[in-house]
Length: 465
Image (cartoon, rainbow, N blue to C red; front, top):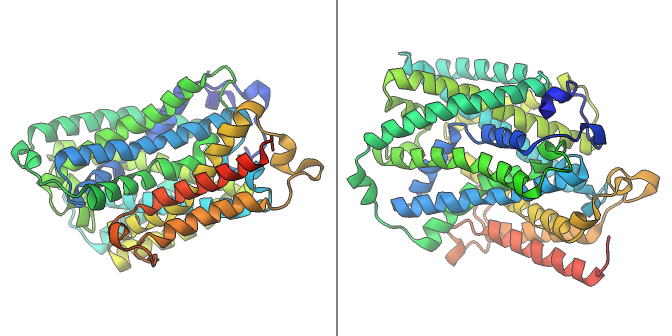
């Protein structure tokens, strides 16, 4: 019996951040495959493919950039190991590194990131629903967009109030349904693509085209989801092997995402304005015959709902980690107001989806990459062998209640160095010149600086923390 069916009370409002009891740690890796497949099978993956091509890359370079970018899900695999051993959420486990008070900073940023992703999902879902209506014969208009936003936002809120057993059941089925539709669409596109145009795409710069494309994909996939890995692996049985967990997480995420990005790459040749369109989802629907576009966009809309719920669930755990205790209905209301405000601005004021989207990914990616470096190194050097101490996780007996200054400094230092060499669109680093001027290498800089800094700190201590 699956983890979700076993635990009927596993709901957003009641699960909390307590350690999973031994009797309930009976999950199987295949459950993680469906969770991460559902989290990455949304139509946004097609947009990722368009973004890659927009960096001026050839077909082969685009495929390689997609492969290297989604390989960032290795980070999620590692944080999933921590969930099995620590038996609680990712940012709660992060307390042993930064201290209960010190952990407030990365947890707050993690919550903001997840809220941003909820906004991205609502925007994408709204555009997908609007594209569905257009495929059915309705004309594009602000009224149609507003109706789609109201309908999709309401649907997301309703689903988020359901128990996780229902949500994961939906994920499993939508993964199958949308996956099947995606295969049909890919085959249609493959046989209707002018391959001479695809293969004749000129090669772009490996430094100023390929690396930025990789960093944007990594920021939007593995780096963004690393903060949630343990949230879904904490029910895994101690007998679940790390290899099986890793294969389930990385495979579940990368297989559908690569298929969708491949579709986006091919569509970008047929639709050169796909990456710059105010509604790229509608453009995707316009190239498909109605018999294919309508069911595909309908399945895509439903799939995005399940992705939005994952973000909401992890965001709720982060609020609990911060010590904010509110009822689920109030938490959903707070999320809904903030997310809808962002969605309204992007859809009706800026009318630019991909511009703010890429800026958001790069900015958040700098901070999350620095955190991921510290969390993974801490797990590898300390927790894999010694596990997680409950006293340190929850401040029991007065332990670990303050700020662990050196780890927090390593996180800030990595993020600061990354921002200094990064142009995010609204915060441009003064050192984002030369090689860094038109790239997003700041993500790698932040990761490496925090990794080296925290590594030196652990080496200097030379003892178990």
